[in-house]
Length: 312
Image: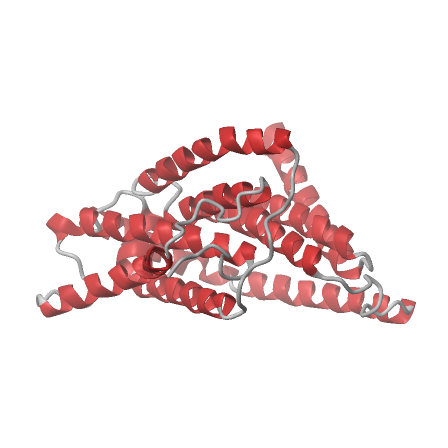
C-alpha cells in the first residue's frame, strides 16, 4: 500500500468518526436549533461518505434531499413551533447518557450487520455483472438509472406513490401561513439563483441516462428553487396559481408511470416491460414528469399546506 492509499484510509476513518460524533451530538443536544444544524452537517458529511464509497447517485440525493431539503423542512417546522425548547426534552444526565449509549449500541449492531454480509460481496458483484450484461437492453447507459427505471421500476413507482400520499396529507392541513419577510438583497439573490437551479435540474435530469443524476436529484433542485422563492417573499414559491394545475403536476409523475405500465401490459409487453427500441423515450418521459411532481411535492412540503392564493 502506497502513501496515497494510506492517506485515503486515514481520511475514511476520520469521516466515520466525525459522522458518529455528529450523530450523537444531534441526538443529545437539548437545543433544537443546534440539533437541526448538526443534522444538516451530518447529512453533508454522509454525502462525502457515500462519495468515498463510489456511490455518487446516493451522495447527490443525500446532499440535495437529506441535508438540503431535509434541513429546510426542519427549519420551517422550528419556525412554526411556539413551545419552549427545553420543555419536552429530558435534561437528567442519566437519561442523556442512556440515549448516548443506545446510539452506540445501535451503531455497533449496524456495523456488525455490515460485516456479517461481507462474505456475500461476491454475490453482489455477480448481480452487478448481470446488470451490466443487460444494460444495452435497458434504454440507458447508466446502471443505477437502468435498475430504478427499468429492471426494478416497481420500486420507483411505489416511492412516487408514497410522496403523493404524503402531499395529500400535507394539503389536508389547510392553508399555509403568510410568506417570509426578507431583505431586498436576498430577494435579488433569489432572482439570480433560481434560473441557475432550474438549468441545473434540467442537466441533472438529462445526465441521469448516462451518469449520476436522475429525477429525484433534479426534483430536489427544482424544490430548492421553489424554497428560495418562498424565502424571498413570493407567497406561491413559483407554483401555479390554478388549483387544477397544481393537482395535475402533483399526480403527473405517479400517474404517467402507472399509465405507461398499464399500457405496456395491454400491449402484451408486461407491466413496465419497455420495448427495447422505445425504452429510452419511455424512461425519459417518466423521469421528466416525475421531476416536476417531486419538485412540487417537496416545495409544498416546505410550505406546509395549500397556498393562500390557489384558485379553484
